[in-house]
Image (cartoon, rainbow, N blue to C red; front, side, top):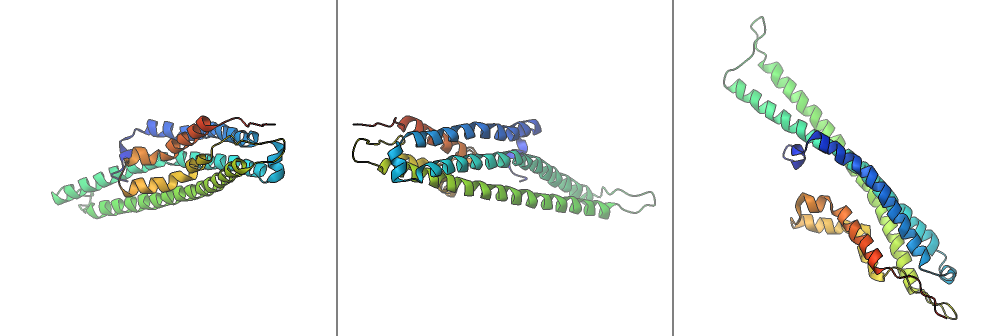
Length: 239
């Protein structure tokens, strides 16, 4: 973290960025609620008779994806501490190097009795470094824990959406009602869970850097909503 680009970001900007995560999760919840109504409005009652799982699966999709972004908001808020730790680690390393240079030049502080303080300075520096290392490990462990729970919600919500979308698209009935799906089948390729393998590919080949890889979840969600919006068609019932 001493070399992280986060160390160049001001404390105020990091705090502002952290608080924006919970705010954005509210709008995500509204958007995923709209996905629920889009799924349930794109079929007639005959669809539910053919597959009674469509309605509960649509609810699971909306709740799962909303929970994903709620947990991502916690991750976003906690990530501000990456900036704080990065600045502190960088400052600690710089101070330790300066102390080593001072000691190497013979600039050694002495107590009133004439004893050297070089040993205590080195011990203090080592203790500070150890404390920072412990806090850093806890911080990274907490971020991974949040990410794991967000990923679980993402997978469940994405799978439920894919089930609904494909089930409704495949639903045809004989007689009076013919159902046309509201969301196209190819929209399942843009579910939020697909951003994870894409991010791994980008990181593996060094494409995009921190801007693209770090913000890929939001960018992919933007593509997801755009596909749903542009591809949506009102249910058509022919007689």
